[in-house]
View 1: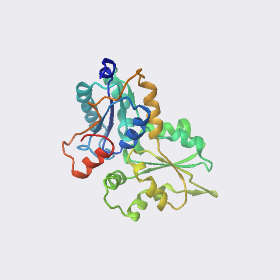
View 2: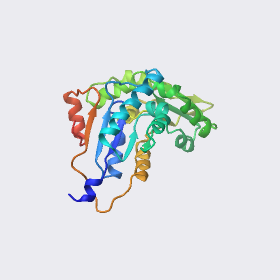
View 3: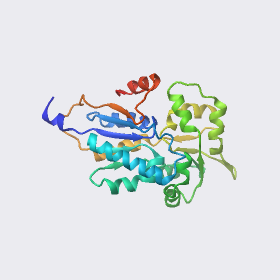
View 4: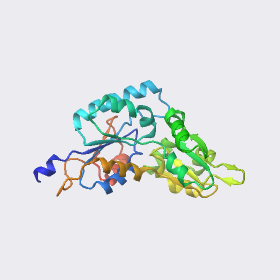
Length: 266
């Protein structure tokens, strides 16, 4: 291992649970020379129902410890609920660190829609954020945007990706409000505004009342991170990273197997 390789810092990717693996998958493709530390705040999951001030304090406290321990190159906050609430506070609290955030992909949806009917499928926390309303005001005034805050879908996605059975009817009950018919037009884009949801995209496509574009922001987040991570000549992937940290300190067999499938030591 060369001195150059040893100097490469890892990328820290943070989520409330395992949804951020959708972003990790894309980030790995674009930054193959970097090691990754995946942090799941499973002890606090799900974030959607948290009181805002309590969640801010929790996330800032966690990052204080994580940055001190791991000294990453860049932090990717792969959670809409957390970043729309606490992104500005993180940057203020840790000005020396570069944060790549995750926000609802309302701007690309507004640019891409043909019907003008766009839905945003999110957690209740993301739906109620002023940040989300500001994105609509800034980029989607010409569209009819429906915000759909699901209480249960993040938990269902966690179960689904671990291999548990999830009923079609239960999932449809969470997503059916996304489908709007108005003035002879139908919703044609649904923004997946929670990183857990893309894991269920094939199931959504199968049970949806009509075809729509399910907009997954993972690739765009990874591209943004790549622009902020310096390329190092002749670098090779380090061996001491690529592990997962769970704030509960407990992972069942299915979770460990899932992490291994994504190339992470649990």
